[in-house]
Amino acid sequence: MWRQASMNSGKRINKILAVLLLCGTLYTFVFLSSDEPTTTRNEATNFCLAPSPLLTGSTNVNFEDGSGRTNWPPTFDEINQDNLHLQAGGFYPGPSTCTPKATVAIIIPYRDRDVHLRFQLHYLLGILFRQQTRHVIIVAEQEGLDIFNKGQLMNTAFNYVMKELMLEVDCVFFHDVDSISEDDRTLYECRGNNEVVHLSHRMDKFNYRFCCGVTVGGVLGMLPAQFAKVNGFSNIYSGWGGEDDDMNARLTKLGGYKIYRPVDEYNRYAMVHHKRDADNPNNDYGRRLYLKWKQRQPNDGLNSLETQVTSVVKHPTHTRLYIQTKHINVDDWLGEEQPDIINQG
Image (cartoon, rainbow, N blue to C red; front, side, top):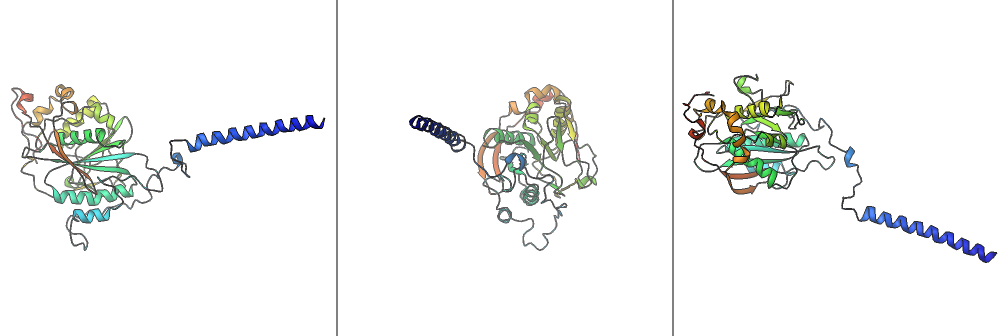
């Protein structure tokens, strides 16, 4: 009898050891063999707070002097030193204490606006940091002597962000270099599938009133899928005027998107004072070209882009794309239409 009891006891011990071994194997498989990084915090519940606790309100935009700073606007080296939290190419992964809800790309079309770009980077980088936004800034610089073409530059930079940048971008803002936000509570964030965001509808130039033929110019944000759906910007408009009106029609009439414009009193932008560039004159065909936006749209945009990125330079505060644009013969698109004058002033 004792021998039988001993055998039964041994069987029970073997069963217990087998269970313990199985549990240990499962633990090793689940926790030690997982490809996901282990963490002591729950990422799903540790998103950065909205609004960010770092916001200070007014950015105190000042184009005249730097309140005692030797250089105003700050030099690029000084801006680099003020933003040591950035990685190469102007990428900010977000705070170490929380997880940003989205990744934003800021695209700035640019040529020969050194002072304006320094003002923009000085203010914008501070705003994005205080908003706790994961972001990257792309400066799309046009090379050569051809007339400035914002549409081609912005389309090219968008393609770079989507195809070359190893980053999943949730929201893209197209940002004039001379439009400066006056308050960090004006958020650089998209609003979902049915709306695009126009932040700069109140400019000091127009006494902070939405007026004077402005549609979606200045600072415009949208989801990448929204931009792709309307085939991006037109490539045809060279010089000043027209491409924003064309994009407005694409977004509202083709895409069916609503234009969201923040209504709080602090949603304001200041424009860096400057004279009209000699290489960015008023175009004299914009209205006639715009009237044919619907016929052109299927074959004028991202799918017909013929620019060339000649080099990519990753600065500490931004990624600089040097772009050779494609010269466009507007007469091919106007046919026998006679030129018209729009957007003077």
